[in-house]
Every structure is written in C-alpha cells, then in structure tokens.
Amino acid sequence: MQLSRRNTLLAGGLLLPGMASAATPSALPPQPEHSGMARARLGVTENPFGPSPAARRAIVESVAEAAYYPHSEAPLRDIIARQEGLAHDHLTLSSGSLDALTLLTVAIAQSGRVVAPAPSYDTHLIYAARQGIESDRVPLRADHHFDLDAMLAAIGPQTKLAYVCNPNNPTGLRPDPEALRAFCIAASAKVPVLVDEAYFELAPDPHRQSMASLVREGHDVIVTRTFSKVYGLAGFRIAYTLAQPERIRLLNSRITTSRNQAGLAAAAACLGDTAYLAGAIAYLKGCREQIYRICEANRLRYLPSDGTFVYIDCGMPAAALQQRLKALSVEVRLFEGEAYRNWMRVGTATPAELAYFAKVLPEALKG
Image (cartoon, rainbow, N blue to C red):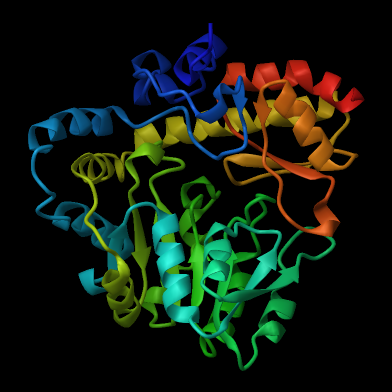
C-alpha cells in the first residue's frame, strides 16, 4: 500500500511544543499523492503541518462562494497593509510568489540582464531565459554566503534587475541584515532589487531581517512573500508583494487572473495567528533537526538552515546519489554550479518520510 503524506505524518508522531494548541496532526485532511508516488518527497519545500485551524474553517466556509468569482481582495490586503505600515498602492496579491517573481523579472528585465547569486532559487530566471533574458550569476563566497560586493560590482549598463533570496535557497543562510540593507540601497539606486522572502517567518527576528522597511522608505526594492511555506497553503497559491506604486502597477498589469476564494479566505484567517505560527515553526525546526541528525549519523557535512530545507555535502557527485535515492523512492533536489556538484537540498517533510530517508541513505551512499 502506498503511503500518503497524511499517513506518514500521523505515523511519524512528531508533536512539538505549541503544536497541540495550534493544529494537531490528527486534524489533517487527506492529501493528494505526488508525482511518482515517492516514499519520501524531499525535493520540494512544503510544510506538511498544514494550514491553521482558522484557515481550515475559512476554507470550508468558502465553499458556499465557490460558484462565484472572488469579488474582493480587500480583507487580506487590509491585514497586510496594517501589518506592514503601507498604503494599498504599495502592495498586491498573486497566485504564489513564483507568479510575482516571474512576471516582474520578465517585465523589468526585458531587453536586459539580471544579476543574481549562484546557487540560488532560479525557477523564475529559467523562465526569463526562455524569453531571451539572461542572468549574470555571481558565485557565493567560500563561506557559502552572498558576495554582495561582487553582486554590486556586477551591475552594469545592461543590468535591469538584481535578485536575492533571503534566506538563500538552497543554502538556507541569511546575510547580515545591515549588509543586505546597504546592498539593496546601493543597488536600487541603479536598478530595481527583487528580494524573495518566501521563508520570512522562520527568521529569528523576521522584521529586522526583512527588507520591507526599504519599501516604506521609498527605495526601489520589491519584496515578495508567500503563504505556501510556513503557513502550509502551498496548494492554494496565494502570496503578496510589497513595492513602490509604479512597480505594483506594473505587476498588476501583467497578472492575468484573480486569486481563488479559498486561498484568500485562508490567508486572511491565518495571518497574525501567533499560536498557530509558533506551532508551525516548531514543527519545521523539528524536521530540520531530524535532517541534521541524519547527516551526522552518516558523517555528512550540512549548512544550518533558516528555510524549510537543508543543504548537504554528499561527499560524492550529487547527481549520482540523486539517482540512487530515486531508485529507492526518495526525491531530492540539486542546484547548478560546479562548486556545488557534491551538494543536494533535502526539504522538510513528514517525520516518517524523513525516517525512511534515514533508513535508505546509507545504502545509497554505498552505491
């Protein structure tokens, strides 16, 4: 019998402080199987802890409106505007942050180039490349952090956009917030700076780490955030962008459709739910700790992460290990770059999925 992610979550039995009062695993509804029916889906960055109880109720209640197109995004926009201290013309919603990242990159960098670190999240850059927009990828420093000085120096006459992911994906490392702030101010005087904050809530001090304050100060900085990761709403495709009004108008001019009723309702219900958020963060940190222990048991080096994933030095070509793991029904993700050819990213998942990964990894490493 194939294991669903719900079954593996229940079987894993991970219950951390704050979880019981926020959302219990037993309340999780059945979840669809993923492509390939892998036993351990570790190639993506999801949160099987799932939506908050309030979000679940809002989703159920939204069914009564399912026959109708969404009439207003105002309730969610109002909450975000108050939280960020911004007027409505400084924010907009999108169907996941990848939607915003892709549309903005193509719109802003048309007939130009993008400066971005490598390795880093680049799905939107790959899409832009198919539209003829190339990227100048700046290698990470020896300590695996952004080389912000080199990125600033790489901004040239053809550069139309600079991109950073905070924390970086796949390393999970955050730059010093003051250093990133200085980079964003200097770079945004030349080109717009797109800051991907998909894992915003997992930062030790989120608002200090965030670059949203630069939007409030009037800099040409664009911040994207999502409900897909920590809030457990990946299947509902809802996210928001903070930027200067002209950038928001540009993004809105490219968005082709409205959001979905359930996603809007769920996001509005869970944003600011501190009890749920504490439980979700504790769950994800517990999953990361489980991955750390797996690495240590197999004598593999890893980077401590602030994301929903861990970057692991396999000690061998990662592409070969990825294929061995695939044969054992485990999915992991690799990122391009010769310097990281031995590294793979392992996403947080259910405790049972991670336990299965721990079981088969020694076999895969032996070959």
